[in-house]
Image (cartoon, rainbow, N blue to C red; front, side, top):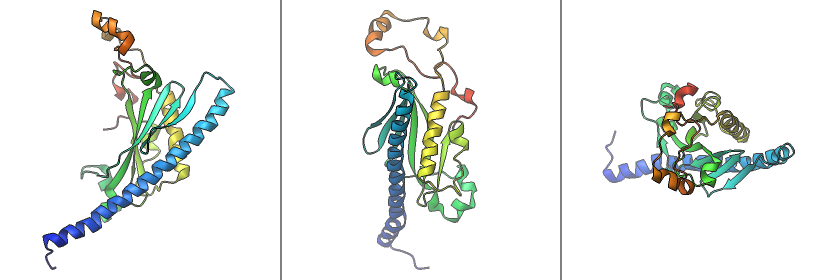
Length: 230
């Protein structure tokens, strides 16, 4: 085989790898746009139905830019964020155990959509010390194959990277699973020993900065769900 010059090697790499990454980005961006429109419709549908039950319960979709949107569900805030870069899995990752990836290593390059769960009040009252959690990461490759690393149903319902191809029906199911998870993931009171002492400074500034940290599992190991994402 003829040895390529550095110039030729650069062109070959740009053609094979960079073009492939553009395809992955385009696929992920298309999925994210569909996710946006589906979430917006879901929010509108639930809003009309929930308002008939209790007008105090708020369901709301909010656009936050090209690569981010929010879905408020009662006291929870789900934030969906698409990363603009493309990533490859390291060789220790489970995706490399499949013949699907071993036959074509470029299938391991994926775009990522992160799903975060916060308390809506954390943003409403600017409680900057509050914590949220990554509850899922969706990976999409050049062939629109996908899987999700995540908590509970998000982790075991959507993990067939070899066969699963993303479509609008699946995106709706993912959104519904995400909503169900955050509704089941309740706020725990922090241990008494974690809050029994406050400085004068903490107390004086609490009304402004809400420095008493709040999170759904504050003071508890998140692993109590027994499905921690590594």
